[in-house]
Length: 350
Image (cartoon, rainbow, N blue to C red):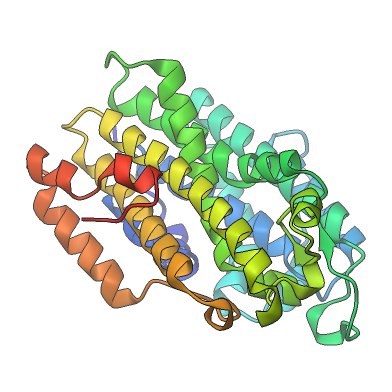
């Protein structure tokens, strides 16, 4: 029997997920409710972590209580009214007000599905907590003193760990839930398939980090590791200064190369899916293509342009969706959409 996402939660999903809602809607009904609920719960925890108007200790406490409820370790009601009232977005306010409904929906799934959802949320919230501990000393954006030091990650391993905790684990979850419900008997290289799913998620997160670099620096945080900055004779406060371009751009492009390599693994992952799973293929292909297009724009940007948030336009997204829909049932046309080998070495969408 196929499960449906309850209408109130579906409405909430539409309001909070924006462009990702299209990806969720194209998924097969057998996995859409589980992935949608996991997304809603992750958005709720992310909203808590990002509520800068409240003290870090209060957010960490709320995250811990929420995680305990998700994991079934507590039945204490969640009181997020202050958190909800602190939201500038009506959708995020509603998201926190309806956490009990989301938690109730979790109970409707099989024990195996519940475990997968709980496992991925436990990993995501661990990443969010580490972020709060790392950057917790920063003042809210509105009151941050001019010249306050920017905090950077220390080692490259910390960046790799962070991209797994908040996104790579989602690729792993996505893989396992789809495998269990849609193609349990397909003969695949399981280890490679899961590893590519993890790299897919990490690549998307790395694209977000590189795209959001100006906003993060303004907020006082830098996800580019200090050890790499020091090697390039850079420090966070001058990263986007036009005078630093000759030192910064080569390093920035190295990270773009890494993101491209991860997305190439994501495209390999997409094409490892049984060809008949065209809905899942589309749901995977769209973020790959949008990610690659974002990288192209970042690679072409000069220092002044990088000071602004580079983004793919809605028109470009519609074009990606249209071309992929036309090609999804034609193997030759589908594989021409993306040259994985070229992209891994800095190439482009066809």
